[in-house]
Image (cartoon, rainbow, N blue to C red; front, side):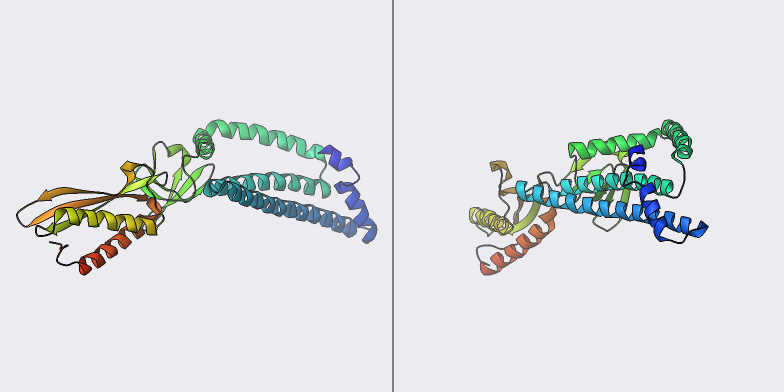
Length: 288
């Protein structure tokens, strides 16, 4: 930093330039120092905003090139933006103090004391260190991303934010949960792949069983095509099975594998479609 203070573009040069334009005397000197300090802070803000724009452009280009990973890139974008902002504003504050006339040698003992104090606090804040280290592993390993539907311990919800120390979830009732990253020991990520969607129906014994099961399966496949959901393996295709029967009715279960984000919408669309099919064929297909 000394090269900047002694160079032709440092605070001393800017201060001399403004002092020549302002009235002489005590107030002129301090006005020049305040102007230089304000310019330093303004330049820092402009630099941070330019970096954020550049980072956002890079994330958009990466998503357009790969076609995936947008949520994870958005998470890393927020982390890099915050880290860069803190570093730039810290340096800008030091330069502003130098521009106000604070000698660099005066701040050196203060910075040394702050380093020793930070080391002492670090030993006493082992939980905080554990939270930060775990947060780095969560981000680096991609255990879950912003927007994923996860279960952490006894809390299930959608990830709203991932920080270095905490993770924010919001459940299906709108309740927000803040979980320390150090407490994240077991994670179930429902967004990583598909989840099972079972739908049980009861048919009358007068319904032809084979035709009824085939119609259920065809209706399920048509509904999945509407949501552009394709099976990645034979085990992920819609299946219909008989789970019970008596003298008057037959119980069947229709099983689909769907993305967690579309689960409710697919279930609603499938039930509506089944009602239309039953209404069109009341003799061949009747519910008990």
